[in-house]
Image 1 (spheres, rainbow, N blue to C red):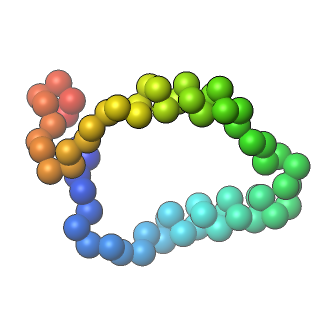
Image 2 (image 1 turned 180 degrees about the vertical axis):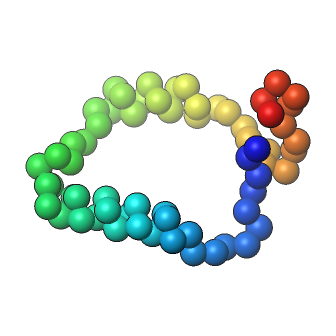
Length: 63
């Protein structure tokens, strides 16, 4: 089930994951790569026009 979070709370797991990413980037900056403009355009073409209403209920087949 997907729902919008009304309250902003610190998520300890998210914080740990972001710290892991930050440490990995610091230790291995050579792994960071820029995505091509073609790939960015392709991704945007797939989802760019999708409207999402987080207040509307999911369809039965999406639950």
